[in-house]
Length: 417
Image (cartoon, rainbow, N blue to C red; front, side):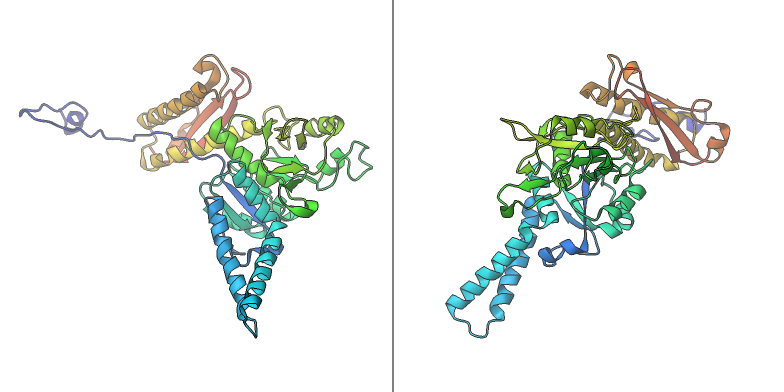
């Protein structure tokens, strides 16, 4: 018997003792990754109020609201100290007055800053760690951030944000965008009116990888009824729902904390925004009802006329599955493209999807109704794929109805068989 055969069998130990055998070969396990890690876009015009607390050309990371306030407090102290230093005569009264004035100016500038309030609402509504990046550099900066799953407009220039969404949110990109809705009061007067629902929807891209939320918000405790973009609060709700219920649950009929919608949305506007008369660009509304706080009252994408990708949780679930499976398949890079490798991959993906099914992410009373995993020669690959090191796996998920599968095809480069 050859040594290779002996290695595949249990050793014949001659001496009593404790022996540990280490199995050879690829061991795959798929872990559920983070699903709601946003990048907040900002314009250069929003930076002044931050007094250098964030870099205008690079990515800034915050893990909590405490981290945000700590960074800003340092800049506030610097501003107060600078104001006192500039005084020619420094009586105690003058120093106190100058410091209070400088501090108040700093606070007032932040209070009306869209990025600041967007971050505040994000953390208040359940958000976790996040990034900030200039809207003009999103396309260059975001690909280097492995854990990002959301792009948040946060009041940034819509034209620049749309360009970034086109580049970063698409097939195989595993990223979803949250747009701010119109900052005017919508109506149903017809497209000849600039504030008609359908007319305003034309300003957004036709994509299943994004959703729009309306109206803008007033933030509790901020005077002068300044309007702030809703996308930051919505991103926080996404994070909260993902954490408490799962990415497959709709972030709808969920209360927004710390803010109120600027406009009261009528049933007529809501109906036309949710299910457009033509096209698929739904606008998800935020509504305030008697006896409740403001509720997100929709969960449709900007391609709601397409049955497959009509709903936000379906698109985001597939993004999450694709990201998790791709991450788990990467160790197969140096494995032979052969049946043993395929079976290990198939088993790992099957276990992962079975876990999702048990949590209620997939529809169907049996695993066979909820998902399938296919991999192999003559199934997902031809000989040319194997010869050129392409391992292809197909995954079908019943995210909406049992046995109605939406199929993902994933490719991993491996060693040629």
